[in-house]
Image (cartoon, rainbow, N blue to C red):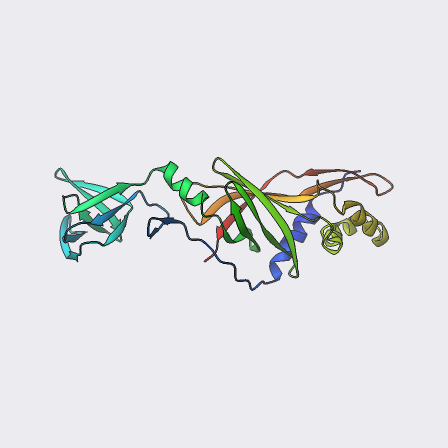
Length: 258
């Protein structure tokens, strides 16, 4: 017989009631000496003192003078009477002249920079629930870390980067108490406690028993659209585990924390 997934999703939500205080070094996503921000299309470097403008009352008005060596993120461009201005945020602009050097940021360059700086702490959000994990090591496209499970446990996390998609697997391995907790939803189907304990024992060191989270890198270095998949059990009438598959995915938000 196949056990329903709804119980495990409830267990996932319950994890949000526990808090973790951790301190994991995190690499910000940098472009040279500038931190990447959502919506950036490039940057300007001031090579000679030049005015900073504000678009106000349908004209550009000087706000102050920018000094040589300063750098600014560019989020947009605006052309007025044939003159190009770089939008640096908050309605402020720098005119394209020999006094500034503009460097565009392509989508490919953006994703490449983000993929090289995945180390850090993350939060998975599903509704009001919050669960954390951390990528502690990054070796090229190979990732390793920990997943904070049920408020008092660390589960091993391994993953890869393929194109712009990050895939992470959370393994239960030989963590019996955590496995037993993960199948606690079987109580809803009147499975005796002793049988649940036997199911948990069968799942120890089962390489197919893991959770999976995926997210795609697009135009934001810190927040990603993702999917979460849980292990779905096949159990026969004697409560023997006959198979484990991943559930259908459900949408989550993945955020890199400060």
